[in-house]
Amino acid sequence: MGFDFESTEAMAGSIFMGAGGAMPAIWTLIAAIVCVYALWSGNRHEHQAYDKLKK
Amino acid sequence: MEEQLAELVAKVAELEAKANVTNTMFAETYYYLSIPLMVIIHAGFLAYEMGASRQKNALASGIKNILAFAFMMPTFYFFGWWIYWGFPTGLTFSEGGMGISGAGYANSLALGWGGSAAAMGPNIADQASGVFWGAFAMFAATTASIFSGAVIERIQTVGFVILAVVLGSFAWVLAAAWGWHADGWLVTKFGLHDFGAAGLVHAVAGFFALGVLINLGPRIGKFNEDGSANHIGGHNMPFTVTGLMLIIVGFWGFLMACVIIPGEAWSWYGDKATTIYGTPMTLSSLAFNILMGMSGGIIGAWVIARDPFFMMSGALAGIIATASGLDVYWPPLAFVMGFAGGALLKPCYNWLERRGIDDAVGAVTVHGTIGLFGLIMFGVWGSGLPALQGDGVATVSLLGQFVGAVVFFLVGFVPGYVVSWLLNAMGMLRVTKEAELAGLDATKVPMQAYPDGITASAMPAE
Image 1 (cartoon, chains in turn orange, purple):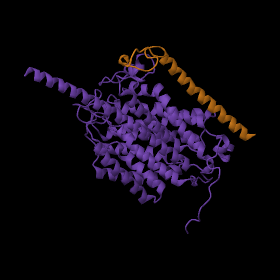
Image 2 (cartoon, chains in turn green, purple; image 1 turned 180 degrees about the horizontal axis):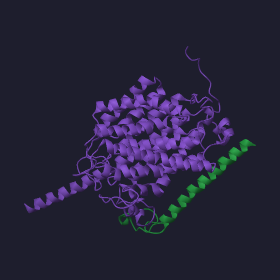
Image 3 (cartoon, one colour; image 1 turned 120 degrees about the horizontal axis):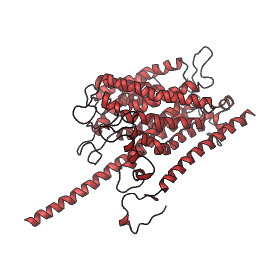
Image 4 (spheres, chains in turn brown, cyan; image 1 turned 135 degrees about the vertical axis):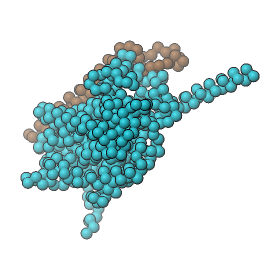
């Protein structure tokens, strides 16, 4: 990631970090995994709450 | 003389460059500002749903609604936007006549990796993709919020979020690709016209909710053994009604984002605004017809129901009943259509309730039934309108609008029913009976909506 622009004059087209490399794909995948983890964690918390109420 | 001419040419070029920058900045700002306006829709749905919940479920309803919004953004980024550009010609992923659809086209601008990433992140050569994506993501979130209210007080949070993603980042996007895209097969073959998304947003979301409600079942205590229904009132009607008004404020952003403004490389014309189909229109059309339709809806609901909940729902119904043709309705006709939408609300809501469907906020009726009503009726009033820019294109017809209505019903209902059936089979759809009776806030939310309770300040009038 990071940038190698020498000045703002060189900033043309894509200006996001990692543009043109493999990192955007990797971060897209990580973001998707975070979503799946959040759902898994939420589901576990929710079912634990229901089980607790039953006891 | 030549020197003066050269100077003049340079001056004109300079002015042209400045005008282009102004127009591009205007275009970017126009869609950018539609986004916070559409966020107001979600503020409205949040207030609406929390107010319509009983006190014991107020925060759980809020959490569910907020999460629908939050999960919609990344999932629409990951795959929803691709579906819109990839699917217009049907299930073949082929390129349409306008050359702006198909798998190849979608791969070039709607994926978060490879060459497509240039259109999916900050790019100073592209001042359109981000604001268009943002506006569409907000449409997606709106569908999820429409569905959200119907299922309050007994659906599991994660099961709900999964359903919201299926609706917002898949089902309605498919409908939009087919009926809200210049290469959409419903448009090119059947002349479908749904300017303000009465069918492809509202009806899809409303009937998705119906599919889910069938598997989810009613709240405990909603129906008696003889099948008669009890009214389960929310804990804060003023909050609900204010939420409805906020939704209507946000609708102005939703509808302004349905307009393609002129003068850019991606515009249909250099000098006039159009619908997403490239048919000419003005923002004044919207001002006339939204206000007339909305007012008709309020009055229609008041005549039939006499209560503020249905009156504000009637405002929504009035806009939805006219949404398909807000670009070309004659304002008094929009008023009458709005009136009909508002008047139909309560009878349609009661009809559904008599069939054992517990739609807590009337979402199936307001968005589903009235959405299809508006879509089909536009085929009566708008027959002959060119469906697309250009010569020899399909025109609006009652048959075309009816085909669109059937498709949108199925695109909403089938995924809602199937996915909720699967979630139910996996134990991820409905909360336990104990949790429903105790209240969802006490069961799983680590705070209280009203720690000091709510006390009546005065006795009600006799």
